[in-house]
Image 1 (spheres, rainbow, N blue to C red):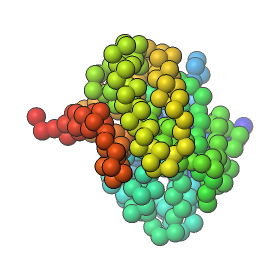
Image 2: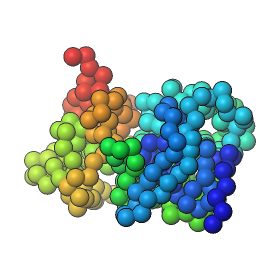
Image 3: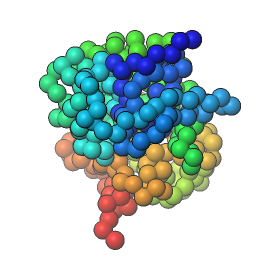
Length: 299
């Protein structure tokens, strides 16, 4: 297969998620431009016994960008959006589709102030477990899958990823899908507080706490219009309990590395929206306060 450098497809933030998307594109002959804070010659993504090597370089100077791209994947954390503003200003334009590969349900509102007028912002729900390794490579520990809204711009993202190993689904009720993923991410915040991986959910006390928290989150999600059944908390807990005991989550990885945590996007949003709807969120309030202090201090 002939591999072509596609400067009309760009990835901002080649971390675990961004590297995975870069790898599936490169594998299909659509090598994207790579942009981030750390200069690298290329990327390595491990899928089973296979290694996908994506040629670089990872560019670090926004002034070297010649013009807007056709499709941009934003794969930085929610805490890093402002730091990516210069990349967004250079790589996005009135004909650009920006696909936001971030946690939460507020991607469009958070990113839109940083892009030029006319840029179409498409949120995405990322379902695949990708973990950064100590040597800088990324291991993909499951099938790659994205969910997009049935909205303008989604068709262009679908086309870019067509024929890759990343499955793309377009959902008419994207809000409900995004909220279900947010519930999963909220419960994963407990892993950052304990410093433990998915195996901790085998404990009955943690399972009980997680269910209480998830049911609280579910009430807020429904108030926001999400159509999720009573069974969702149990399904999410079962997913954690059936995962490999050493499976991590990005918020735990960030804590272990001493980085700022996405506590507001993944957890604080429950308390914020609960207050707006007059819904008590006692578990969320405790979890959010502890995560905020873990992330931001002082002390």
